[in-house]
Length: 290
Image 1 (cartoon, one colour):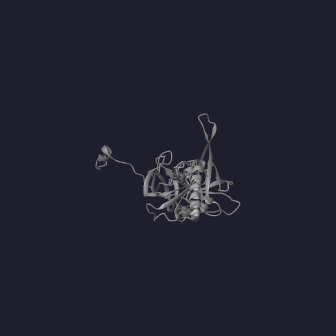
Image 2 (cartoon, rainbow, N blue to C red):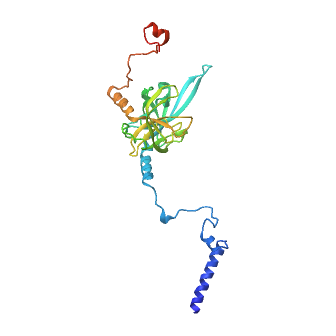
Image 3 (cartoon, rainbow, N blue to C red):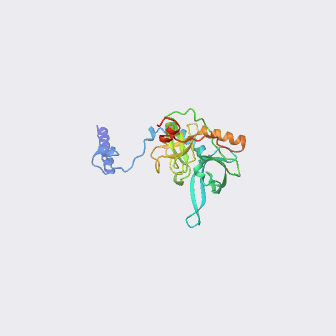
């Protein structure tokens, strides 16, 4: 009997001590961390599942792809109203396509052509002057060349002909000068036609909700295998609102093959021009007036 009494007393004293030590008068409040007034909480380690397979996939792709993604800065000297030379700075992104230092970017990133001072900054912060090998302004594509002191990490080009809406994509670039930034999303639509800032039409573009901002232009759009399927090119609005556009990578492949075969890229053209004919001119030519 005495032993049972001692055990009961010990239990009561223990409960009282627990409540008193936590500064609460209610025992159940003391057991509930939310009602106990704590300011922060940690996860239940026993139930923690760690990283998901999708997170692991994104991390693995970034570890490799960001090494081959570069920051591109340009300086072009232009004359002002008083014929003074004024430097005009720009920046964008690009990615390395072979270990010898050939780099893909957008044409508008290196606007200014041969007059521009172009510098490429690698992921290890080393920088090199770059020259333009070809510049396809109509398709907003450019190929640059640097002379690295070592073999470089590079990205493999995928296939943009069999993309699917809803497919996961990853974008890497230097938005607002913040180098090595990764954003993820999906392909929102395919074969979009969009008008560039200067009014030039851009056809068959990949639309994505992966965040693309000023400075991302020229960077890679990757699939879940880490292959480049597009070149991040433009956005709707001054900053990301979930609508970005990329050039399909297969369009670039044909330019690279042409350049490799001929040592230059020449945009094909048809020697025909057209003019809209209507009204009195149409009637004079005995054509329908509409």
